[in-house]
Image 1: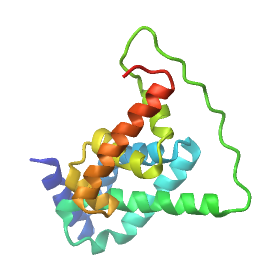
Image 2 (image 1 turned 180 degrees about the horizontal axis):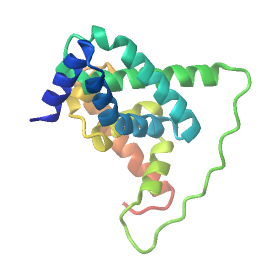
Image 3 (image 1 turned 90 degrees about the horizontal axis):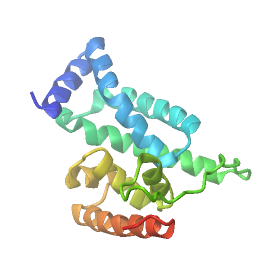
Image 4 (image 1 turned 180 degrees about the vertical axis):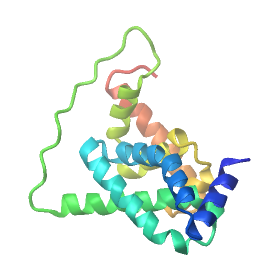
Length: 180
């Protein structure tokens, strides 16, 4: 059984009040959602809080989900909105929290393959729009149409953002000393 079909079945059961199905959905999607939020925020403490807020919003809105087979894009749309709300609140305050200590990137002379830390550093240097589409497309393996749905833009716009994001990531990594 394909995962989206399985998710749709779990969603319908959860909408009918089956707590086991709801628990299975949360178990299945908690880690991907957490990783998505973490990649957008880059701070573990905030990631935990925002992930919990996103799950609370998902659980509240689940009974109103009309297309259970579109659960994953719907879930990540809610997560994205929660992250944006968090960032709006954070940067809207007069006092901005001090960022955690950042580590300077050291070029890897042994290999031209980037490790997770290097990719995270490259992603952190991108504007949110570009980082968002890269995370959805490459790290969560969403098709371009689902990326467009989560980002609430037409597919052509998602495609052009993805192209621009790839170029910006490459430039960012080359600037930090990584070879293309």
